[in-house]
Amino acid sequence: TVAEGVARRATATKEALAKLAPCASDVRADSEQACARTIVERIAPLAYRRPLAAGEADELLALYTVGRTDATFDVGIATVIEALLQSPDFLYRIEWGTPDPERPALRRPTGDEMATRLSYLLWGTMPDDELRRAAQAGELSTKEGVRAHAERMIEDPRFRTTVRFFFDNLLPISNLADLERNAEAFPTFSRTLGSFMREETQRFLEHEIFEGTGTWPSILTAPYSFMNGPLAAFYGVEGVTGDEFQQVQLDTTQRLGLLTQAGVMAGTTHSNNTNPVIRGSFVIQKLMCQKIPLPTGDILERVKPPDPYTGATARERFSQHSKDPVCAGCHQFLDPAGFPFENYDAVGQFRTTENDVQIDASGGVPGTDVTVSGPIELVRELAQNEDVLGCFATRWAEYGYGLTLRSEDACTKTDVKAAFKASGYNVKQLLVELTQTDAFHYMAAQEE
Image (tube, helix red, strand yellow):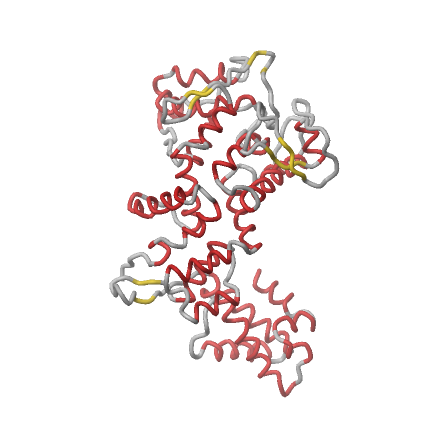
């Protein structure tokens, strides 16, 4: 259905047809077949992300002829486009590979396959003309050649779109515009404000990565953010008006870096009441790559959120987990990372009390003996924690390679983390280094 709709729009007018090939804007009966071949030979390699094999153009032209029968030129071309958009060669990133000249037992992606790997890693779309030419010229057969093009590609605006997409999936911000909160309890929050929170985070990330120091530690501890008028009013920041986002210095006694932004705090809260367990789980599992197994069986039956009236503060309500020996095994890790964020309510506004009771925001860094007195100390400690720094590299590797790194991928993990550290934890450089691993340059062993 999607293919049919795209094909119809791509052939609806002379102007649309002209985008496929100039000859299609005013085609004559005696030149239709030649023009159809021109279109096929232009767009099919783009769709397949490789040169056409012998006979493929003829097969597509045969489809054109069928579609053209008892119809018009545009219908024939639409038939070809429908076929292209439903072809496995378009829908899947098919890799046959070629034997490595130095180690014939191993296979490497072909030039066109490497161009596709590179373009989807850095741009999330098909290769451009320059990358396709490089593939045909053999420039992508070495790590040095791939690096040169990767360095070019990270300066392209399309790379910024990929970065935005990655963080939309890593962070709990993609659904902020749909976040629901009790209007009476949180009168300053709205879905529109939720969308502004998401944009704040993305603007901040883009600025820090592409115009700032560009490191993961600096993202976690930057003393500024981006706000428009309504968002600044929500934060209580003066001097910002209008809809345009602008850089704003933070009160670093209350907020510092990415994790203390209202959107991240609201996104890690699933109701009108904060939950330090969920926030702690986000830190441990998403940012430190440590797995906390979900409870099962009889233990699962005992896991119930505490009644909001069983304590004035979240610490009072949730401390029962640590007291219960069945639950304590996991919550001794989860709770210390979540309690420091209790200084932010369910919509991310800063607070020092809950129900008129002073909040104890002390906690610690999971897996260490480091203690903190609140969120600012916590984010500073996380920004220099080896697990946090290494996990960020792992998250990008899994995204870029399209797989979950397991124990058998230990070498890849080690290489990526080491390269990230050597770059000073630079985000852009990390993406270049992802194109230099053996995992990127060789194909996995396949069974016949």
